[in-house]
Amino acid sequence: MLGVGSAILGAVPAVASAADEAVDNPARVILQKADEIRFPVQGFEVGVRIRSVDGGAAPEEREFRVYSKGNENTIVQTTKPAAERGQILLMKGRDLWLFVPNVSQPVRLSLAQRLTGVVSNGDIARANFSGDYNPTLVGTEKIGDEAFHVLELIAIDRTVTYQKVRYWVRQSNGAPHKAEFYSLSDRLLKTCSYENYRALGGKVRPTRLVMVDAVKADTRSVMDYNEMRLVELPDKMFTKEYLKKVQ
Image 1 (cartoon, rainbow, N blue to C red):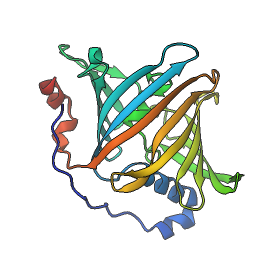
Image 2: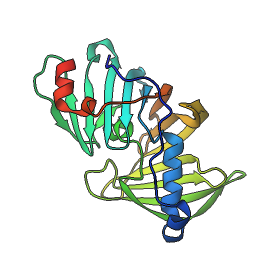
Image 3: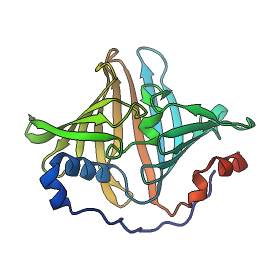
Image 4: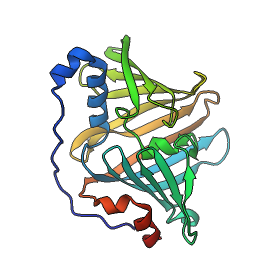
């Protein structure tokens, strides 16, 4: 397993006044708040279990350890199944490489490529939306007794995991509720619901994401997050040279 520093509280970087930004783009403020609810601003590590089902086929389960520093640096280490243990994904910016034990050179991958089930590489390696999309507040919607902001997120370029996202965020507390993900041709690819809110990494967050294929409703993946802790992650971890040494 990769070594990391000790747990820290970490300081939140200085940001522009939310009040000032809300005047210019309230959708940006809503999006950033939802991102901060989902994941810490500072460095963290977290366990992820993904259980996928495809129709009547036997369920497939995989487990990962994720190390993330901001939205630009992420390592995803496979811990299960045993046959894939030690495989590592490295994300730098929107560049992604796969390291395989006993293979000298990493393989370049796309964020949109499938990782497992209906989960794409970008779903686990680059989960925050603020840095990748231009948001617009397109309306509000009531679901049951709750009111939601509805955002439309347009990708800043074609390297982003999805070209468009439709995103429902609770008006009461800024927490994400559900999302729809679209292709470049505006085809709905899959939906996601954010569930099981509980304390994780010092804050109440959604600890389960349920992703459902837009065409085959019986094809889905459930992502469960656990054992999150805030950590100090050295920059050298997020380099190809470092990861080649720990393979």
